[in-house]
Length: 263
Image 1 (cartoon, helix red, strand yellow):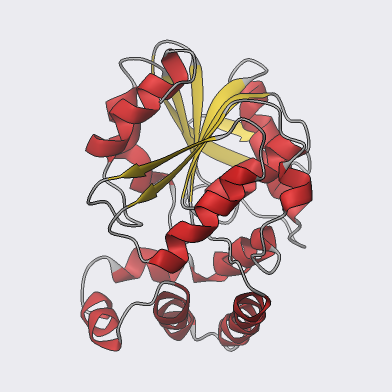
Image 2: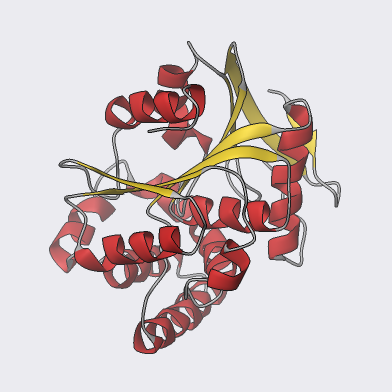
């Protein structure tokens, strides 16, 4: 497996496939690069796709203490690996991370993000901060299963019945292994309010995406964040929710990144 070295020396593991312009995929919470392999394969005919494990996930390393700047450094290392600049797609908190990187001037040539999990009101932001503290306490106590369950139920609105079913499925163990990195996602979001001032610095083409099957509280901040960036586009994908399928997403990303960034 190829490995890039971040600014602090942390090894960042990635898969590379395809041929064409470089495109980097940035995963969201409770996901490593395995979650995006289907999307990477769908995009590989048109792009050289770099699908990496964010720090603390999968085969990548981790170096304490955590800082958002280090994660942005990880993406910078991937951009260097891709030849110095690249297209970027980020899912959920990975989208928020990519937006922060673009706002800091990293050499991202165009950016697409799917449902970065911002909030719109002070009350929602306060509840997100409370959730981050509660999840952190569970992680500190070694209760990683409970940390994942709390996150899924409160952050994503998943019912107790569904999380019980998940805990009995083969999907649970991979999420449980990534529980400690939920702290990193909360740090990237920094309370989850839309950082409109920072987003306004972004001058590259940006496409914001959401799914029509996602709840309003997930979709409305996407529209508001898109409005913060001059010239940003917004599209809603029919019948898709937060777990958007690669088969639906890949053709839209290919059109946006290949055809003058018009989705």
